[in-house]
Amino acid sequence: MALEIGQADQTTRVAPVRIGHWIGGAPDSAPVERHGDVYNPATGVVTGHVDLATASDVDRVVRVAAEAFRGWAETSLVRRARILFAFRDLVDRHLGDIAALITAEHGKVLADARGEVARGLEVVDFACGIPHLLKGGFSENVSTAVDAYSIQQPLGVVAGITPFNFPAMVPMWMFPVAIACGNTFILKPSEKDPSASRLLAELWAEAGLPSGVFNVVQGDKVAVDAILQHPGIAAVSFVGSTPVARYVYEQGTQHGKRVQALGGAKNHAVVLPDADLDAAADALVGAAFGSAGERCMAISAVVAVGAAGDALVERIAERARELVVGPGTEDASEMGPLVTRAHRDRVASYVDAGVSSGAKLVLDGRATALPATDGFWLGPTLFDRVGPEMSIYRDEIFGPVLSVLRADTFEEALDLVNHNPYGNGTAIFTTDGRAARRFQHEVTVGMVGINIPIPVPMAFYSFGGWKDSLFGDSHVHGVHGIHFYTRTKAVTSSWPAPGPGGRDYGFPVNK
Ligand code: NAD
Image 1: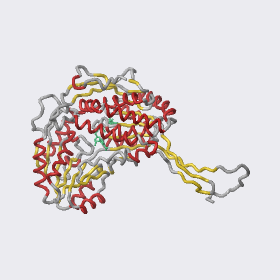
Image 2 (image 1 turned 135 degrees about the horizontal axis):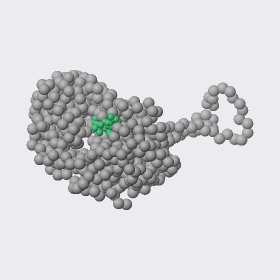
Image 3 (image 1 turned 90 degrees about the vertical axis):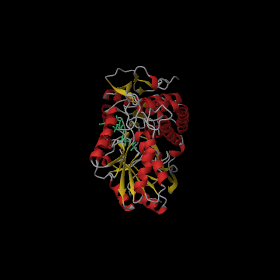
Image 4 (image 1 turned 135 degrees about the vertical axis):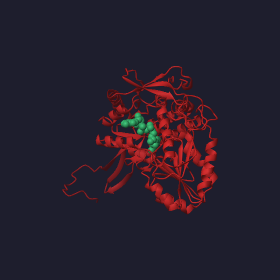
């Protein structure tokens, strides 16, 4: 099968391409009322026009997915697993093509884009084990000649709404598990970098997934609202900023849907005085400035405890000064541009705000030597002596801006982390096992790293934060994913010998 998206060289597009929906196993050819611009963030040039779905487009795709559900839910587990294996192989073979699309529309460096696809692929690996994962429990003779067992059944049509910062990995947190469980899936990717999801749709078709099981509907708030209100959609997984996550959770649940909505973050790294400061600084520059800070698990606040302070700031600054900012397509680049001009300007405005609020500007990303293109560039920025009342600490900036706060004691640092409204990820750097264990036990954050800066759980654990970083009960992928995308039925069964069984008007008790 020809890969129409994958074969387009995104870096040398001469005219913007149209990026449309994928409905019922094929590109959608219906007329389009609205479209949005997609940029190459390294050049500032518009490289694509993405179709923006209306409520009637969403209705169309729900009907197709509902029709496909009838057959897919009845497809044997072994057959589902074989299609997942074939998809896994195709994604692996096209990893470079998917990464190139991500770099072209998001801006992150190619190695980082490849890493994102590889982490998404781990969830496909996990979902390939679906025959084992869907095994229910069975208890023989719970009463005399009575057996009890549980089965897990798919929900129906489910939807995923995803952010710009991981255009392949975040959708892949959701759909491999949802589809493996027997649901049909509608993906609404970010309108800023929509091409990777279209290529993934083509790979599903090539893997032999029946038409209508995986669909992509491109769009913005209009499409999201239509998804949240559509009675034919049973569940919604959302990943994005906290205000939108809260809205999606409230709207989706009000419309009777099962919803998991993962939100934004302010991830702290606590560095104790006994830590290996060189190793900590190496880890922190990667975690703060990798992907231009546009990661939900990026470290954006460092809490330096006691004597760790000055030496740590000096080491982070040394490394950040050497960081090579450039187009994601160049091997030497370590950090690419921000995703849009508006976002770049918003992040730069936080640097202004940090200076006016009195934080010490150690490294100014506005003044870094940057590529001479019209791209959305901003260099790494480091602030020291940041106060918890400052907007650069309170708000999620989602850019290459790292704030260092000082604390006198471990307790003071822990208190700071626990009082932050976000609770996505955190890390501690120390050589003291007892301090690390206490931190892991007492911190009110969903994902914890010990001498690991970006503790993204493996596919067979589940990913999710606490507090304002997640609305709903379930984290994504792993066992939580299986639980989220199925409902459990408990069966109690007896096969008595023919003949009268006797009447009993009391509540059934076990014999
Ligand atoms: P966003 O909230 O702007 O957009 C996310 C999705 O919601 C997109 O598909 C977008 O089209 C849609 N959307 C945007 N505004 C909407 C509105 N008003 N009503 C309905 N739908 C709307 O997020 P983003 O800028 O694309 O991504 C960055 C954010 O995502 C950051 O806050 C980051 O922390 C968060 N994020 C969180 C995680 C996590 O696992 N917790 C992972 C990745 C990103």
